[in-house]
Image 1 (cartoon, rainbow, N blue to C red):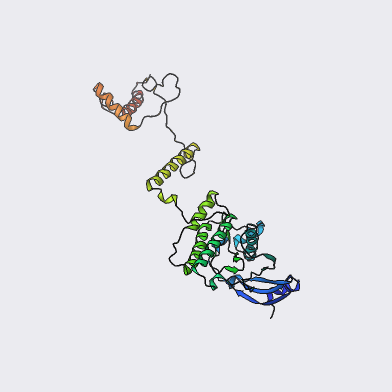
Image 2 (image 1 turned 60 degrees about the vertical axis):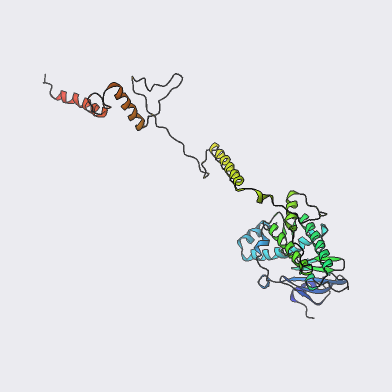
Length: 366
């Protein structure tokens, strides 16, 4: 057959001896059966981004980082160079995940080479020695389907213990090998601790597996295996030998509204105290200082003199308080608030100031 353009450099380098035939075509890549290293292997050639049908890619790439800070900035800005680096990172993720999962004891194909965006890996064979088919292409008895589901659930547990969630696990991403199921296709895999969608993706993966087994075992009750596994993972209690029961209780749903409101109120109180201590208001801005207007006490008055041990002027009384005090004094003395003449004190002061000036004008000249 004609050698695909993407495999020509590998043939020229001697990594691939011969391209035998196309094997499978998926939404992410084209699989070829090749001769490499003296044996039949598979070459996974990734499709260009515009030719892929994988949806909601951002859901899987969240939290992914590259070591080169320049590349990371370019990827964040979505420049032409950044998009190219993002594409390279998408392809290399599968290689990294396969090595990571193989070391954790997960049943995955063995990788051999990753050159120019092409992954050369083990050819998984079925019981008849031919390339292994996908689970979605086969028929099973109720007993065999249930046993397969239990095997795959154990693989999901091992992956989660390694900190990996497949993200697109279904019966079409599992090959039926001679020694049991083999999980494939990991470019969309996410790290459990680095992606906030990891729990949602895990639940979807396990639900897909339960739909698979229900095709051959109708009436089988659906259980919350993924929720149980995630809860054990968060607690640090999940091991690669954990057997899930599907029994899961969400403790959060039993918290009443009153309890939640009480927790919120306590948190607001603590935050208010903390901000007041730091001199901030509830918006995080510096709180304005409250100024108290003061005025010196009138000379000869003992009512506003500070007590012993206290120095400085007393605060000015509010107008309402001053008026009330003046009214009370007038009731005791029988005089009007303005004084004996019934006129305001300010008016009397003005008359007293004018009086010397008027008297000085009528004095006879000496």
